[in-house]
Image (cartoon, rainbow, N blue to C red; front, side, top):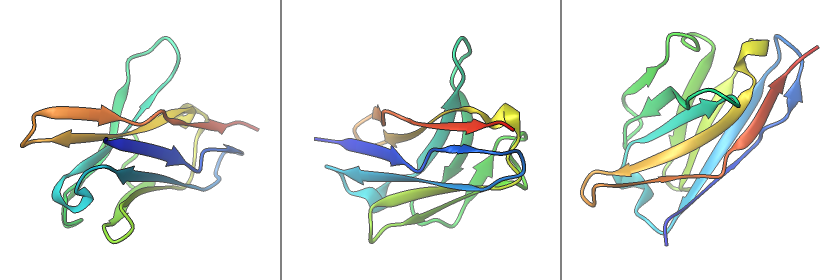
Length: 118
């Protein structure tokens, strides 16, 4: 079955750096675009970044543009999110998401907690 597992979340100080990973299994990873989202308790889950299946095209939320970089290694079935110049407002649970356009279904991982605090 389809499975997405995020990792790499941690507690860091403002201005710090983290690299999140999302490893997929149970599907052809290289076939699909992937996205990162984040959620703070009491708020809606919000889009962070997306990356095309071949890694050629990416998009970012305005709030993270210039600080976050999304990438992927299709040989390792893994999506990454490099986060630099972290701010307290980046504190959230970060999720990766798969939308399979041919099956018209979507899947979420369980998330990884990122806390930015001094």
